[in-house]
Image (cartoon, rainbow, N blue to C red; front, side, top):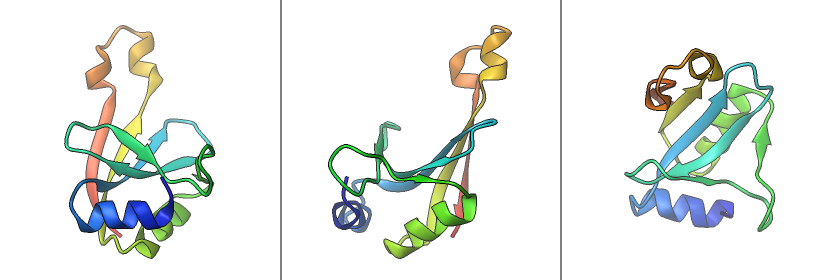
Amino acid sequence: MHPQQLAKAFENNHLYPAIINTADATHYLVGGADPQGNFVQLSTNQHAATPCLSFEHAKQLLRNLGAEEAHFTLHTAYDEMIGVPTEHCLTTMKLKL
C-alpha cells in the first residue's frame, strides 16, 4: 500500500500502524494491520515492500505517516522448532513513536 493510502487508512481507523520483525532478521516490515491482525505492507511501488534496516527507521516511517503509536510484533521460529503452537510464538506490544 502506498504511503498516502496507508496514512488515510490510519486516519480512518481502518488499519493501525504496525511493525513486524522476526528474531535474528536484519530488517523490519512496516505497514498497517486490521483488527483481525492481517498485515498490509508499506510499499513504494505496487509490488515491493519497504524493508527497514533499523527499528528507528521503521518508527520514523510511521511517524512520517502521522502515526503516534504502533503495534510491534516479534516472531520467533525457535519456539516453533520445539513444538510450541504458532499462536504462542508471537510477542506483540504497543509502543509510542
